[in-house]
Amino acid sequence: MTDFLHKLSTKIIRENQTVVLEDLNVSGMVKNRKLSRAISDLGWRTFRTFLEGKAEKYGRDFRVINRWEPTSQICSNCGFKGGKLDLKVREWECLNCGSKHVLRRECSNKYISRGRAVRDIKRTWRQA
Image (cartoon, rainbow, N blue to C red):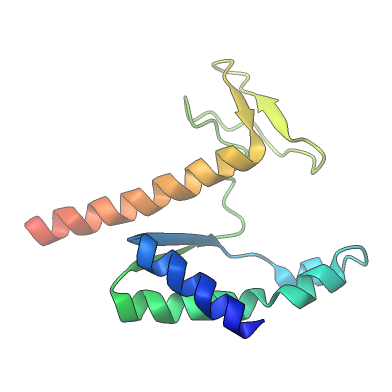
């Protein structure tokens, strides 16, 4: 498993200037009887450690987003905060502007925008 994680982390770091992860509550997720074996077998902490080390080695930006950040609740179109969503909800419509969102894609877009913001701040700082 560690060989696979090394190869995957190297590929991700080499192909990207900024890598953004969510700080997951893995210990809490393991308490779920239906998910515990699958989660324990993945080696998430090891993977994150590999990514952090290789990001430093290759001079890449590595960011971790707080697990409490409401990434799935905020409309990427207008910024309206819709409120807490049930885990079964996969799509939602903004009550303010009416735009439709797919939950996983919406979270990914938030992570990407956070990563770009960090990169843009560093670029501005370097130019000054």
